[in-house]
Image (cartoon, rainbow, N blue to C red; front, side, top):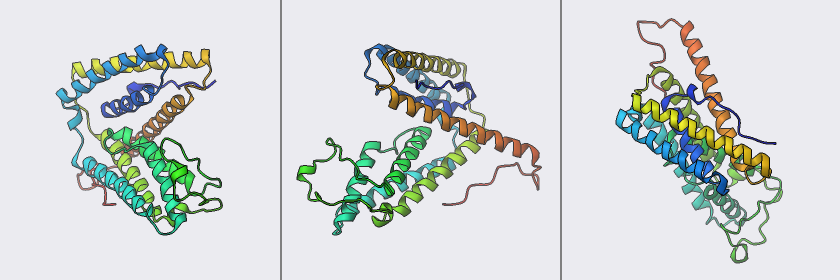
Length: 283
């Protein structure tokens, strides 16, 4: 039986912890089982208190200009990808237009990540890129979801993408997807490195709010896992898998930080500077 993995949230930095909860709440809200509603609502209440305490204590203002700049580069890459796909949807070549139409479905299904918190956006971009790469060389036709398109009225009916590979390149989107992927990787790498160097301001109220939010998260996980065991995992599997992917990514970030810190500890800075002070190069 599938279940949400255990994870020690106390190992995360303040901003990472906040971003984790931002993403987790979105996932848990997808569950329509009334037996978990009370737990999710309590989780949201605790999260909002945590959010408020972060703003009062300055917890959201510790990130540097470089993090903000790299986040903008990432946002611009996503918006450029979307604009380019809109152009391709009107291409005179029906195959390219159909590729773009199906990519538009993928984009809308994943949603616009640009307004999400830093780590939630990172997760959303990773999921989007995975979907696009899977579609790129898919050997079968993509199913047309009824809520997003009406095949009966589509001028592209009869256009087949069977045996069509390198679809992103055909639609002029491969370079934009690579740009988005690179921008996201540079952002999360710098974000992780900078957070390991900076001490986040934590007041007593913020610490208490974080601990209560962590506890509320664990309560939701415990209830959802119990429901999956009793009722079967089918109705909960998407949420379980998405939360577990988030946990895996957070563990990877922690492992990266451990490696960076270990290397920094063995490196002696030259010229009196501090290790890790260099600014990231432009994309």
